[in-house]
Amino acid sequence: MAKALTVEVAGTPALTGYERSCEGDPSGTDHGRAIRDVLDRIGDKWSLLVIGTLRGERLRFTELQRHIPGISQRMLTLTLRQLERDGLITRTVHAEVPPRVEYELTELGGTLIQLAMALADWAIENQSSIEDSRAAYDDAHQR
Image (cartoon, rainbow, N blue to C red; front, side, top):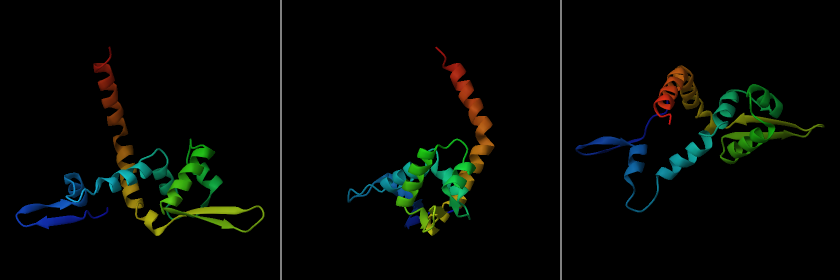
């Protein structure tokens, strides 16, 4: 798991980078923006699945699509473009006929693997509890 960046001030508990971002910055800088930007990218429906699928592999578009059930060609294309733009994957076009395009994680993208897998494991382990809670909430709030 990634280490939390902490800052210690004499007489007060150490704050993580996240906690500091919530307190605001006297200069007016919005440090929470970094968190929101990253969550916007990896918190969408497909990005973590693409990142997890590319873990340790270089795959072609059709191979990626085969490994991610339910993703459309358009959504995979859009997701790959955004991940490439953010520097999390690389796209390599080989000068062949027909052209061969492969995708792989960058070093930066690789740093997300442990976090992504922990989140995926948590989701799988807790899915039934979440579904039970949703059903109980829905039953209690029916009109």
